[in-house]
Length: 369
Ligand SMILES: NC(=O)c1ccc[n+]([C@@H]2O[C@H](COP(=O)([O-])OP(=O)(O)OC[C@H]3O[C@@H](n4cnc5c(N)ncnc54)[C@H](O)[C@@H]3O)[C@@H](O)[C@H]2O)c1
Ligand SMILES: [Zn+2]
Ligand SMILES: [Zn+2]
Image 1 (cartoon, rainbow, N blue to C red):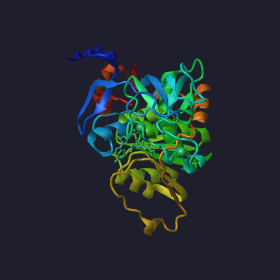
Image 2 (image 1 turned 180 degrees about the vertical axis):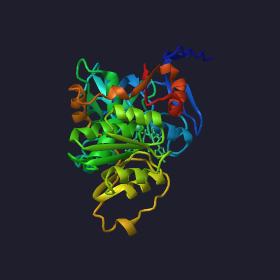
Image 3 (image 1 turned 135 degrees about the vertical axis):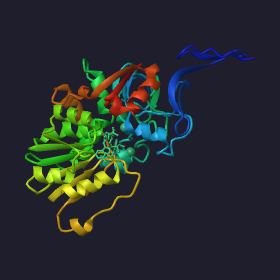
């Protein structure tokens, strides 16, 4: 005979002898395209000496989670807890973890990295041979109460005392992504004219971090006027609504027919990557950030003699420590990206809000456990 008792993050008591108790928590679980539920899952435990279990304090929803929910990321299994961003408190560490102990406040990186393999040694954590983007993808993620973090020493970052923990949720994924894949790969320099195509959280993160390098102009291109007006408050010098005007002609007229020094693609559809090819000046850099599901035409017949560089990158999160310092010194204020707050148990509502971002004027939502 079994009696199941699970009040919230309670426990399931199996009334048998000897009595066993499986501790449970609530989690956002993927059950195939279009299906998710907020349900009981067992608490995670340490599986390897290098693991930590972290109690989630704050988490968020990423555009990539919406892709998962649509079924665009087929390797995500039925039953997977999703989410790859958050801050929390270390609950337990394996015997091999030396940088963290129970009670430490931490940023959870969206990228898990062992710190020891060839790719990690090159700073290419995204391709770690025992990690990369696995959280909320190939292993259970952060949209829950507790999460197991493999290779905790290299995949968690300590939060300084007194920091704005909500703002630091933006360091799990979007700020390093905009900075590494967009700004660093695009080699933004003082005086440059930069175009960022896509004013979602990632494009806006690229806009915020591009300003470390004092570009002369940063032009944001999107079809959502609300996001473009947010971009203006974040330092965009010009905005173009490509749904209303011809963006190629608008860029040519803003740049005396030359085009831009850096074009950052932050959408992930063929039209926007093709736009970057049309607006790039000789010697320019096209930095792709968007996740592309369809092939895109490369116009080498026009670009072969233009001395341009095209880069691609999966975020490595190697810049998280330096970005943390810029947030601490208020050079970067990522809390401006947060538009909505929910309790963790309101996550289904939060998905509805984030899934209707244009109508709800949503950028990042914060879920508090
Ligand atoms: N390379 C990486 O490591 C990495 C990491 C995280 C996210 N991403 C990708 O970055 C991209 C941006 O992420 P996000 O969270 O900001 O997405 P988002 O969907 O919130 O924002 C995309 C923006 O593009 C705009 N847009 C759509 N079609 C457009 C068009 N034809 N022309 C102009 N604007 C258009 C939308 O209005 C929206 O504001 C996504 O493809 C995401 O999967 C990549
Ligand atoms: Zn993400
Ligand atoms: Zn590694």
